[in-house]
Length: 309
Length: 311
Image (cartoon, rainbow over all chains, first blue to last red; front, side):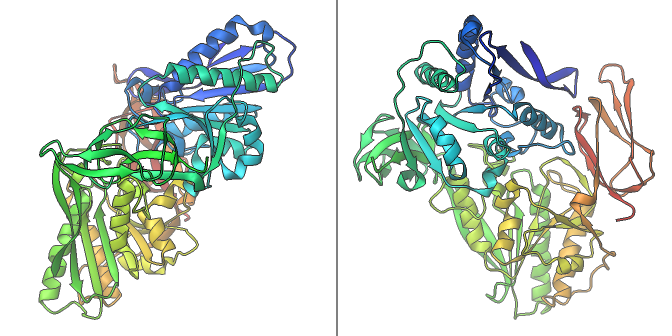
């Protein structure tokens, strides 16, 4: 059943609506609820395909579903409709505004209503893509403070990699942090690239969500084989940033293993034909993030390499 | 006064190198640093700094700057955005003022914040000419964050009508003001009415406030305008007024007005028929501190912040 989590009048004759599709299982109700949330950043579309496919699968198989699956495909509909990462006309990143407020802007109120609607679920899966600049392998990111609760769940999600990262105060206003603090286990999925859909990654995640639901006694349907993820911490991740501005040419493909010191690409000058900088991997390991957008500046992230494998 | 290139933003071959200038007065001692524009629409903030550079140059030339102290003014570090009409870093829309203290091996705006903070760190006092994340008109005020390292007393020396203490939210922890304090600089943000347009009257209010602060601290010998009595307000004590209807926003009350309980302070009109959709009234008596700038407004949006009269 499709309903509105929140509806707010926009300035000139339009409603801003956060829609949710609630799919209620017809099998024995065990009182459980999973929330699939995406579209907080308007330029991240990988979750759109996952939402579409999950709706399709679950609507056809309600007899195998125990409990409720709530799908929120568009947390930031204005951003998605205008190809804009943030909230159009507003300075703050929506994923730095949780749990929201009733005493500030209309967007703060919208954020509060989304947060309240999800609170209390047995699991929330918050699907992000990378931005338009980077491509990433399917991964789950977990704050080290929540690792005990979340890592066992993450292992069933069929993702290539689970990154347990350090806590940071600025991240305390993300949807995932706010929900985890409130006792609603929330996994953050990152995969693919901004403004595009990578169908294979979406299918991989759907298999993982179904397997996790099975584990939670919410799904009686078939289960695809699940591969265990690599689990790592910040200490094993090597970052490669450009130190020059120019055009980045990758020498390797995304998802490949590299040796320490191997050149993964170069920043070149299209005006005079010179190579300004060759970028080397700081560790031996798997290139799990690689630059997609070729224009780079001093500091632009080029790659992340997972070492210690 | 000496002009110094603090660092360069270099994006060749697509953009030419952009120098970020610092203007130094007095000794090499790190006494007071003043930061202007860090966002591409902060023309007023840059202008206030430019006027300050001009004023201090004259004060120093006349021998009225105490040579025991060192002062640094950075009018702008946001030329890359200003010259293309963008508020944030135009490539990825990130905000330099959400990247402090910066990271020299990080992403572009982290590196820029690092370059700025490298110059600004270690000063005894810091003043940022700031703009708010919601467009609107403020009463001139000095704002500081309650970080646990906060010493608000010097905030009274600006002689602005209000000294506002803000309880930081998580996203505030990456601002310049917050990090200045963490690194033991007594930091203040000065807010006046304008951001993207030059407002002479308010630029002069900010300029006089900074010069007054410097004179009272003994950094300069300056007889300018007397300031006003400063009231201390915790941001939390202000009450907010929000819309219940969406439409054209017609404010009646202005920043600085004293409004009575139930006084009409704004109207929301139908964008198609100009019919009144909502008459907005003050919840209680108080001084209007902030009025939203918007021709049209969404439902449940913030339009006023009012300081209750008893505060």
